[in-house]
Image 1 (tube, rainbow, N blue to C red):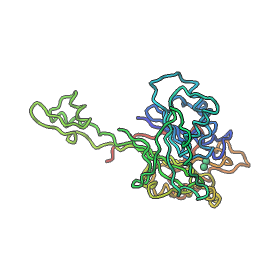
Image 2 (spheres, rainbow, N blue to C red; image 1 turned 180 degrees about the horizontal axis):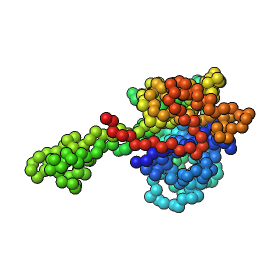
Image 3 (cartoon, rainbow, N blue to C red; image 1 turned 90 degrees about the vertical axis):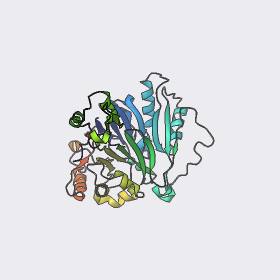
Image 4 (cartoon, protein in one colour; image 1 turned 180 degrees about the vertical axis):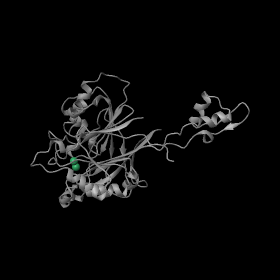
Length: 365
Ligand SMILES: [Zn+2]
Ligand SMILES: [Zn+2]
């Protein structure tokens, strides 16, 4: 089952000709999940090999404009390109409290009617996610006016035991959010595939006298079978060890994490996508603005023993290496700074339209 990540915007603060505002797509089984939707994300889609019409879920890390100002326009364009279909499942949008009101009002004020249903599931932030003076209560949101149908969704509170938010879980994966510290409450998301059932050991099956056919399927799905000779065979007798799932962590803007959950959730991630807005020489300025430097990102990656660190959300002064003029700041310096902390482990600097494949895991020996 293929899985890949494509960056549509890797710049901070605003979209520029060399770096779009924050957006990336996680593609799995043909479904596209969009993480952040900065201004211009819809044109970035058009320039890429991806189709916005394939988006089934959207996740917004925080409510700074460079992460969600592209949302109303993108939704309207998807609607223009789609045909009414009453059986269509709603587009699920996840993000901080206040997002539902923003989307609903944008649609109302612009007299936009989407041809597909959507739901907005809001994460309720905690007060320790930003400086006290920046925290907004938002308790008024949705109190006086009930948004009309199509704008409903769940309100998700932090699970105090797990120290995380459970967004969705099915047979194949679980998706959780955790708290980050930024100028305003920001979130990280972790997509964890569940282990896949191991392969059937055909030789063993043959030796036990199990004929290929429906019994194979039964054993693979976890049920014991009884043969004609009365012998009972349990799945564990003939299945090889389960294949571990992949783990992808996508963090919003932050100068650090809140609580212990983030490190546990990101532990041994296959890919960690972390912001590095400014280089290490500007750490004080970065922290003041709630941002990270390559060193800060790498330290977190090191604690979590992640297999691949990808840096993104660069200040617009850092042009992609191939487009750098003589006067421009050198982005490769950020790579060097990050790799120094990780004892030489390779760090990837994201660029717009870069795609990273995440291969299936092999069985642990
Ligand atoms: Zn940002
Ligand atoms: Zn921000």
